[in-house]
Amino acid sequence: MNKQRIPSQLSFLDKAFPALILLCMAAGLALGKAAPSLGHTLEPLIPFGLFLMIYPTVTKVPFRALRRSALEGRPAVLSILLNYLVNPLLLFVFGWLFLRNYPDLWTGLILLGIAPCIGMVLVWADLGGADNSLSVSLMAWNSLIQIVSVPVWIYLLIGTRVSLPAGLILESTFLYLGLPLIAAYLTQRVALRVKGEQWFQERFTPVLGKIQLTALLATLVVMFALKGEAIFNAPMLIGYMVLPLALFFFTLFFVGTLSACFIMKLPMDKSITVGFHVTGRNFELSIALALTAFATSPMVAVSTVIGPLIEVPVMLSLAWIGRRLVDRFPLCCAPARADLTA
Image 1: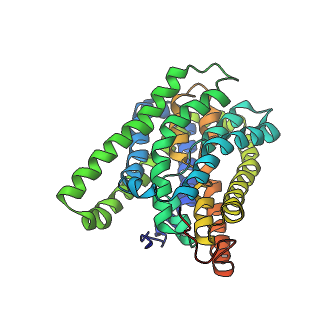
Image 2 (image 1 turned 90 degrees about the vertical axis):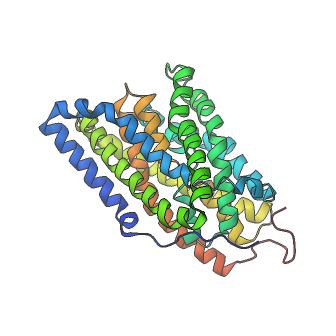
């Protein structure tokens, strides 16, 4: 199977992403301190910003790959099993070990890990030497399955500890994942039919990326202006998120990669593809859920912003590790002539 090309070079904005987040956090805190009413004035714009964060990501999901991904049987089954059965339980365990005395941060950790990434993970996987055709297929499946899995696991893991109406979870999931997914599917169908694949990939997709980044950064400024008081009251709580999140990411990557390699006998490029797709997290959705379903708990929203700050350097380090695993152990435990996707 030919590998689909994924742009693997990080742009200047991608490289500066952690610094931009920190800058927007600082700007929001400064605005909230200087003009406390500003955050509340701008608060009605947050849902619009959240939609613009998520819609560009899912518009880039290759929906046509779903048909092709049926051929990727074993990797898809393993990825789905880890993402939607193992990972939520692992999240709960990590939260209990590190954050059980800080329930809002525990909730933020669960929101950060409850849904797999459906955007930037393609870049991380490609930088790590992954099989890009398989990578696209796994992302397409994840974009659909998490619509059902997210509200279920949030209610099971969080709703049992706090008073959280199931209807509110379903509403937030639909508004910030289901609705953007429907809009993205229609956009993609029309764009590909009218303008073609090349225009969509080379002209339209980069514009979507700029819209997403702008919306994310603007939303962070407003959010930190709105939640600044909670942060000033307990600044050290955010540091408690670093260790469990970093351990969570590294655990997921090596469990996914080694399971694919030693249990399913996949070659290393396919094994690390599974590893990346069970590691990258959908932090845009986690921020959206934190700001809507958990609006009365400001530290939940603040804790979700820590996710990308930790994820970016971790994923870069995993890409370095993945590339070296592929170069050094290309076949892993796979038979040289086996049908490796069946």
